[in-house]
Image (tube, rainbow, N blue to C red):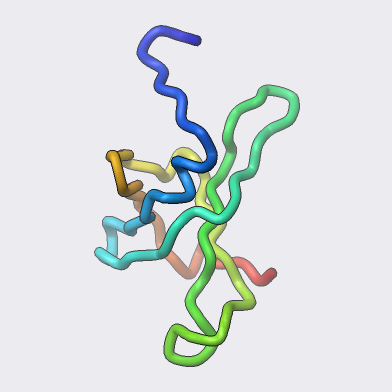
Length: 91
């Protein structure tokens, strides 16, 4: 492992809440990650989008947040800086 690089397990990532610092909104917890198979680097984190009706009844979209948009990670949260509508994708 490179000096100064912290490793985190996927199960630990899934327990962290993702917060958008631009809006102060809680986006949810990570459900998946995108990994570049050639380099082995994490390219994006994936968080479920807002629910269909008043935040309930599932979702048909998700936030695909590039790794470069992560501002800070803490013991239980991940701060991201995004324009939510730009990173919201249909499933």
